[in-house]
Amino acid sequence: MADDVLLRLSGVHTHIGRYHILHGVDLAVRAGRLTMLLGRNGAGKTTTLRTIMGLWRASAGTIAFAGQPITARATPGIARLGIAYVPETMGIFGQLTVRENLLLASGPAGLDPARLARVFAVFPVLKQKFQQAAGTLSGGQKQMVAIARAIIEDRRLIIVDEPTKGLAPAVIGQLIEAFQALKHTSTTILMVEQNFHMASALGDDVAVMDDGRVVHTGTMRDLAADEALQARLLGLSLASHQ
Amino acid sequence: MSRDWPALAIVPAIALLALPLMPFPTWVALTAAGAAMGMMLFLMASGLTLIFGLMDVLNFAHGAFITLGAYVAVSVLGWLAGWAGADSLALNLAALAVAVAAAALASGAAGVVFERAIIRRVHGKHLQQILITVGGMIVAEQLILAAWGAQPLQVAKPALLRGSLILAGAAVEKFRLVAVALGLLVFAAMHLVLNRTRIGLLVRAGVENREMVEALGYRIRRLFVGVFVAGTALAGIGGVMWAVYQETVTAAIGADMTILVFIVVIIGGLGSVGGCFAGAALVGLTANYVGFLEPRLALGSNIALMVLVLLWRPRGLLPLVRS
Image 1 (cartoon, rainbow over the protein chains, first blue to last red):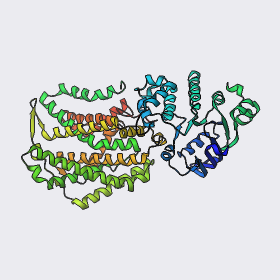
Image 2: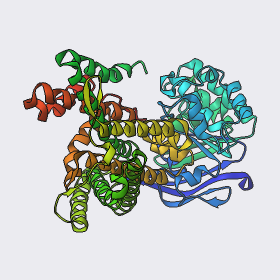
Image 3: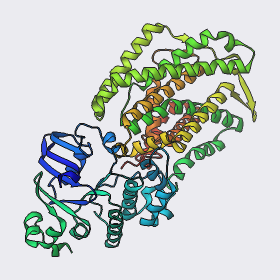
Image 4: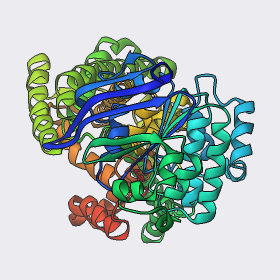
């Protein structure tokens, strides 16, 4: 298992101002798998993702990507290793068109028609809205732009923070299909998700956080099958999420 | 765009509203004067609004770069007195172009130093930005006084740019037409760069969400420096035009313009180049019409205009949307 770890966090602490948010996070994300990062509100999931991206600095511990330490790297340098980040707020540029949003996420050669065709195959609505300002799209369409930006180039790791937040069930269904298609390409994904239905539909591995630490790791299948464990770790049962 | 058209239509609307209130030749002369003043204000203010938009930096020392540009114009036009005084439009324009280029270089270079020495240390701290940039303005003024002396300096307009042309029965100063042409040229260039190049795309994205631009792998720090330098260079160009227009330069020329420049930026919407263009035109036209119709109100007309615009659109004519 250790050999196929693409991203490893060891004893990571993060302070934001005078608040101590992460208290020694240990996490391993295996290559080619979708790892779900679950936990109650305030457990430190988003902080963990932002610390990986260098948007908040780890005050102690190490983060290694493909065996290379990235703890001290600046955010652009981390992204250039092939890591895409879809934040909880989606982070789309509302005044830019869908095309311009995708162009910014593309390499120096610009938008590749073949890759664009793949994105449109996953999110057909983006083809119709291609020249439209992203800020004028619906919430679900904005999330599609945010994810499309992550997949417009080949990435070694995609980090996604709560992609279903505030979205209608129909859109969530579309996103599940999109991520399932992405999984078939063996892309490594680390995802924070509050929607247990989505988490159990997509996750291969799972890590559960509480109070700034990872308190459980295993397979998503095992967690989905164990309601008592869900209740203990997440305070909820599978039935209540469905 | 549908939301933007009333903000853009207000500029021609003000001009048309003024038309029945005065004889046509007077209206033509005042409109040309207002447009020229507006374009010179745009040159000075466009850099400031871009610096605020991308870097979230309130640079109260912006006037120092206007002043530096003005003094460089005095020196360059002095050295090129032969060209500036020649009976040749090409040589006259060449002298002005060299002064503009030299001022842009000098103000841009000063911008590099200022960004490294001062601005870099106060990112995200508005109170410190105000205090330290006001201090920087005072220090810069003193340095300029030390270099060029305390006496006001005269700068003559190039020979064939003096005097007026008769347009529609109105006398329109030739230099004002040059100012309008340069302002439009710079606006068109900025529009092209911002909308047709990858750098422009990054600037627009950075204005909205700096963090996400970094998360996409771009080093926004370099972009910051580039925009700051471009902004200060534009202030220098504005300083050249204002100095030649006024024909007198003092160390306070930039500080005197700072309030007006901030009014333009606020009216346009902080960080918006298009808004800055519309705001500058509006301020220039209003100042000239009010100055003619009711001179006693001229001094307060810009503040009144800003209040009215903000009552109508609290975030300015064309505000930016930040993520």
